[in-house]
Image 1 (cartoon, rainbow, N blue to C red):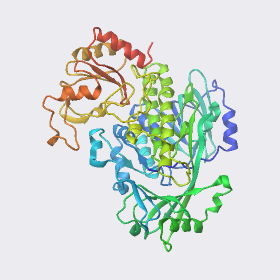
Image 2 (cartoon, rainbow, N blue to C red):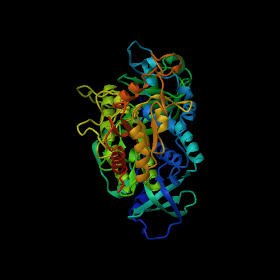
Image 3 (tube, rainbow, N blue to C red):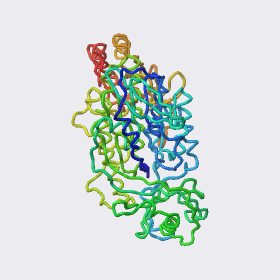
Length: 580
């Protein structure tokens, strides 16, 4: 799966200068808003959506005049789709992605017309087993189709989103951030005061530069030019091979071919060698058409070039994810090789992690220290994921990346996508201090710091996923014999002010049989096996409990009953949410 990030232009001299000439925080502001978001691409728009769902007023500014037009960043993994499902936009995203709904698998071939062809994998979800693990699934939706969906949803939730508006300076103090934004059409500059600034302003982030935060990692890996083109006869050549991407390995014209509509619109990623003196001007229309014909193996193919966009694949992670009230998210915090679509998904999940924490602090039921757990949780995930993305590019022999595959066994996709775990330094109690951030194998069983498992349950006659319980506030799930924990949750919530929701399995929630292969007909209840199944999937006994954060991550669990459950739960809530 290929998910390139186009090269972002370096900040203009005027932008760089203005960022170094920040206004005095004591200066009066023209506008005040709890959260200011810099950057309106996938990550910034996702942050707006998630904040809007949580009722947090915010302003987003994006220097470009509108959303992306180039078909890129198409792979949305299952964890990202779970978050979009909870946020209510999954149906709209799948509708926008319907033209590619039947595309699965990655093909590697010398050409589309020869015999040298191999499927690296044929389907993302062989046998439909994913439905037993998640209420969602993978979705192939290009960035130019996804961004408008996120924009509409964020605005419907009250998000103040201004395209053609640039953040030109920012300065923070103990109480907030003062920024200047400029309308690029009118030239009018406005001063904005916010409690927090989320910088989703790309890999050459002016905000990150203003903070003096460096990047770690190997740096640039390879360079490509993304060429959009129209070729009506190519669909006949492709036939019924509905791939996500086809890596074409002709040494005279290696590249990656991606369908846009499976009929006449396509994208070809051609290697670009700027270090050897090759310039973008060298990629004229005639040369691009020739490269495409050679790669696909059809010398007389009629090709109409419709667009070009250079992009750089890199492996870099910020030394820290922000400073004080200014937080980095997405490409401003990390760059990843495109193979596997890890970069944009990691960025969207950054935004989700940050949104609920900011909302909790602003609402007063979490202490300001909770914001500090953002770096502790998301940076290790980015480091591990970025390394896996580079390894996957080598495994797939991504055009332009002339690196041998890493030796040794690599973590599988599900382990990276669903299995990552936050450490004890995050908003977690009881995480394994020796545990890997990304385990070698994915397990759906809950652990502190890991994603809570998906179980189908019935609540008040409605059939839902346990994931539908997690979004706005923490949730305590007590086992069938965990009445003491259920009662303790009410006491601890009152003592701490944390708006804790509570459910007892077998009373408030009935566990249903899983869907998918081997599931009982009609999803009927499991005939007395609900308690063992719930307990097994959450790593507790019937008299234990699990505390789940608003993002669906297990914050803590009690395998069994304890002598003073209310006191213990109060202690845990204060530690997780950084309450005094």
